[in-house]
Each structure stands twice: as C-alpha cells, then as structure tokens.
View (cartoon, rainbow, N blue to C red):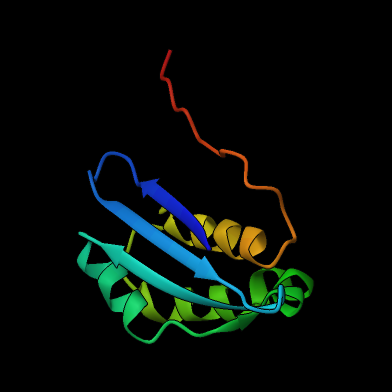
Amino acid sequence: MTKATINAGVCGFTTTVTAESDDMQNVKFEIESDCENIKRLAEDFPQVDGYAEIGAGFDGAIHQVVRKTLKGCCAGCIVPCGIFKAMQVAAGLALPVPASVDIIKE
C-alpha cells in the first residue's frame, strides 16, 4: 500500500491518496480530501493499469478523469500529480521518495 498526503497550498486543503496494487500493475485508489472538488473526483475514480498510464502520459485514465471532473478548479492544483505519483509507487514504477514544490517570492 502506498499513501500520499498532499497539502495543496494556499487553499489550505489536504488530500490523502492510498494506492494499492496486488499485481504490481493494476492500481486501485482511495482518495479522501476536505476539498469539495477533489471529493467529486474521488467518487468514481478508476482503477488503472500503471504501465498503460506511464505510456499514455497526460492522455491516461487518471488525467482524463481529472480533466472531466475538475472543471472550474485551479489549473495549478497539485493533487492530480500526487495521485499519479502514488500510482507509480504502488505499481513499482517509482521509488517512494518525497516530492515537493516550495514557492518563494523574492
């Protein structure tokens, strides 16, 4: 099981993604968030083939459901990237290392 906690930034919302794969390829998700947009996204989130997702890039099932569901949401939302990263780790396609974006205005 892979767990990612995503702090989205100035909106103050936190999302927890649990990604799990029994065969190191097909990944199912549990997504919990205090953001109403992400809660809608989580309702019908698909199980995905991790290898197909990597090959499809931004045209894969994860990004397709994000584009369909997150209408009117901030285009800079980092939650979709966190979901994708959790999928990679659950499928054995990436190592479980921290990823972050630190923004400083100078």
